[in-house]
Amino acid sequence: MKTVDVLISGSLDSPIGPTGTIKRLLKNKEYLRSRGYELNIFSHDNLKNTNDKTNSFQTKKGSDLKNIKSILKHYIKKSRILSVLFTIRSLYFARKLITYYNNLERKPDIVVFHNFFVYEQYTKVIKMQVKKVHFFHNDGLKFAMLYDSYPKLRNSHFA
Image 1 (cartoon, rainbow, N blue to C red):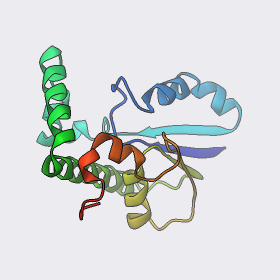
Image 2: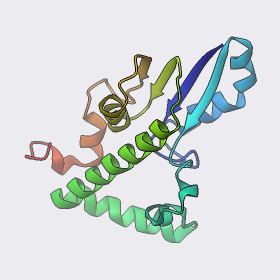
Image 3: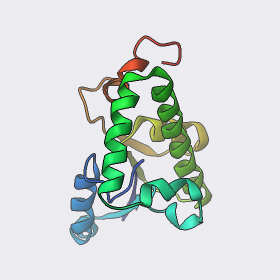
Image 4: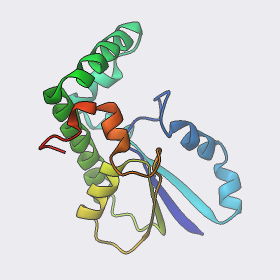
């Protein structure tokens, strides 16, 4: 049996991103097992149980959160400083996920990534020889999605 660990940067509760694919894989976990693959998912959902207050913003439910996120997205796209701060925030959460994962001392056969920052942190922290699969959810350009989300980063010193 081959062990496959999937590391995703967000929550499985997210309505967008690779979570739809991950949820379909989870629904078919028995099928994958019958084909010789043991599937394990590691996301920020694993970190929510660590009494960390940094996730409290993400756990607020309802239309208030949607309004706040919508307003933030608008200002982030127009501000280089906010774009840098939210990119640093993404790096922080990627590092936090990888630190958590590394402490588990897992020995998978394959590790799957859906986020460049998580992949980058994994390769910096974990030096184990393992097959790595990295899905780009764009045209294959490393930072295309980052620049779509934060256009003010393009041609900046930070980028």
